[in-house]
Length: 100
Image (cartoon, rainbow, N blue to C red; front, side, top):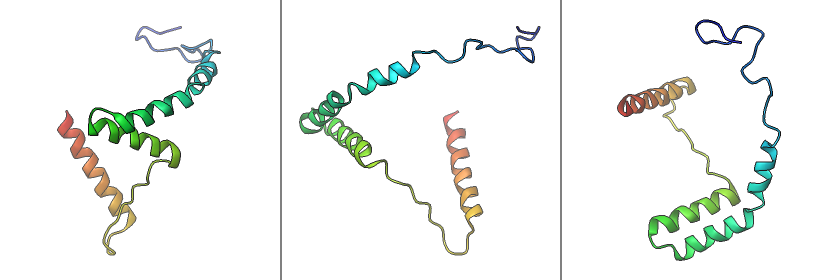
């Protein structure tokens, strides 16, 4: 049930049925293609038409086999962890401003 502004009234939900029951089946179906997907990535890595395709396939295989590499943030010894986080926030904010 919604109010005049289109918002849900307290005590009512827009998803009374909950999550779809077949959601886990979609993931299971996707996982059933794992071997074929890996074989495809290997084929692309070995004989892709461009270096970009081969590199992307190789990176995807490494990420799935070994996990994505961690990104390390380093600062000079005089800066605190909070200062480093503030620096990261400024970079993110600047990139958002450039994008808009």
